[in-house]
Length: 163
Image (tube, rainbow, N blue to C red; front, side):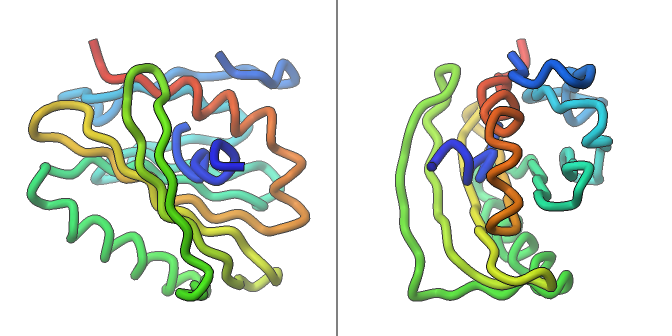
């Protein structure tokens, strides 16, 4: 479940139904790379990458923050979710940690609601260098996100620090 939520956060693409693009970000000074299926239409943002499943059941963004600027990225991620009508149930918060491709990942996840009903929400954090942290924001519609487990696992397992 934590991998699903991570990619709540990051997350070799398991889906063979579509092509995949490995993207380094930010493009001007890459700190990490990740692979998304092409039909998720990944795009670079001002602070990282974002993608959405073709059926809009899952949204993922990965933002790069300076080690000391992580709090602002977290508050920006929560504000972003609120602006999109996602509400978080604070009482449902859980935490876990795991490792992917040598990166120690810390997760916060919650249950909540969006326009389509019940939702899973996650924020995940990993340091990719002494001064850069990745913050992954995940939100998925319960009952629909489960259709993308293989893709999410592939996304998660593709996350790597830039070489």
